[in-house]
Image (cartoon, rainbow, N blue to C red; front, side, top):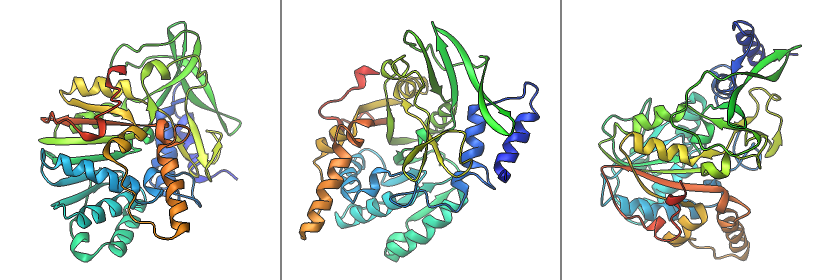
Length: 363
């Protein structure tokens, strides 16, 4: 039986003149359709019983260490935080509590969340986990705050922005679109009619790659801030590593129950993600007159700040803590796979998180 969302996508494709839609349109419907999209659903997407993990789910070390960097930023910008896409709210909980425990004053913790289902979940869990005087500092916003002054957190935001998919062969580019054949979705090559923000550095050979025009809108909004420092955490790499025949099928992937899945299966019931091109983000930083304050691996960022492990008195807690730290910092896990970029508006601070192993020159 065809799901309502799958049927909706099928009809959308059939209504197009060429019988196909861009992958960004397909991904947007799969993830964000208000009726059946993945992030609009009641599925528990996070953690052991969900479809994927994010860094805040491995104990408080990530948030406690990030709080050190936020404290340094508060000497440059106002004491406000805006988290874009707060997921299960674990990072918000841990950062707010860590700030409070350290005696670091903050005025507001804003959350910009697209999913109404997640927003309701976040409200419930934050109200349950935070003292009332701290919960009162949480505010949900519908769009980017004009003239924002403070710290922005974008944790695994960009890899969830709908992307188009392209095929490169000897520097000739075609777009890979989505068609429907016998009620199933499949790829179809089409003449590329889309423009890129800049001249891509394409590797030799034949390969697929992802490119999201949606990044442009986000950076345009960043540029509307008054003073800000934004921390971007995401799976990704620089363009020379990413757009290369060593990755013939690109980095697009589906996740369900923490297992890799086929992109055209489990419509509305699985996550869809890809690796972020940090060279693209660097270009947009320049285009919108923003500054790059640093770019490095997550492991280097956390170690530069000094991993804040908190207390683990029991042996069981201690072993769990060591396991969590390994997942956050190991080269084979999140440590190297996730990159951290800090960008700013009207702020040139030297941040401790990038004091060693800053790799901005690779962008």
